[in-house]
Length: 65
Image (cartoon, rainbow, N blue to C red; front, side, top):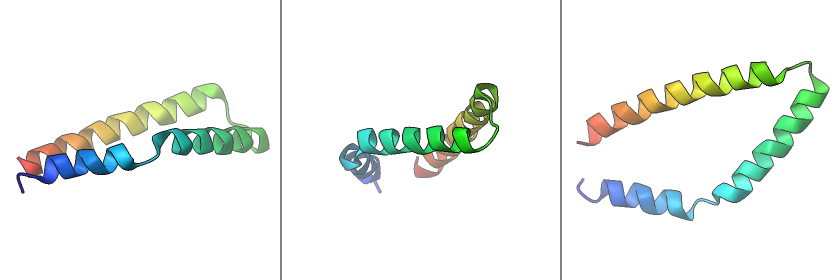
């Protein structure tokens, strides 16, 4: 259990974040062109996702400790 934080860190380091972000950007651009979604709609959704992610990370951190 003590090695879990390092293992998670190693996993995240090997995950190709740059490719994932680029792919997500392309998909988001296509999506917004096909549907009537504003930049404000996207910002609101991202803000909510950030809050949820931070809550889940906090819960995970509490669970691991």
